[in-house]
Length: 361
Image (cartoon, rainbow, N blue to C red; front, side, top):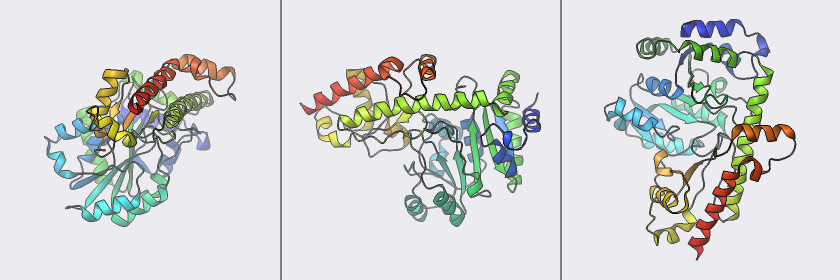
């Protein structure tokens, strides 16, 4: 079964509002070209390369995407990328970046729910208006869509349909990390771009392997039990991330409460002086210091283009997912007991407590 047959086969089995309560039907109604690959970030940087001129990159949604992007351009990608750490897509910040850019950006990559912050873009209409006013194509990375506190499915596409390209996939919301099935949705008005992407696709990945196609068809068809599973997993992610964020806040660490994906993004700027006395000057230093001295694994803010803050990305996934799911199903209306559902995360919070107490001595 080819990638085109997969998409047509799935579409033919969809019927109106029965479309799995997700955004696939919305994409169809907006008349979008769709291609399917093995990974959504592969789609993203292949697409970026089809545009000339500058890209406005608000944060590195995949930290390894940086290396893929730069190496695939022979390092020339640096000259064509305006990096502005603005994960919430504040239009004021974006407008200043565009106005001061040596070359006007023609495309912008956003990511919501956001990696690394675990937050959502709160002003999607303003972001869409910004792209329309500046004639910028928005590449909306929606790979974490559905992984939110209310498991809602949203997309930027209807807000600026002629200026929006969507990359997404099954690996996050459907817990299919090993399968890596990605999709790219392009407005039909961008015929030239769609043809170019199809040319790249045919010579790069050709077609998604057959077993993965079968999985994708089941994922995109109406399936109430699968919808319920996605909602349960999203609830667990939210509860565990919220627990750790609140524990950090109780220690005096600035940490936004979790909104989406399975990350939190604590800020240790208020401890900068105490950290400097221990040789910690940057987020990379902080990440190494915590790993060496407190067995805490994290990624530094600098890995995502945030060079100014002593922030860390914490992936709050150190728990047995099936066990947590079993506990949730025993009583869905009662918050999970983290000592039972995520004991390693509780232990991690204790390690952070030791760290902060040592800093305050």
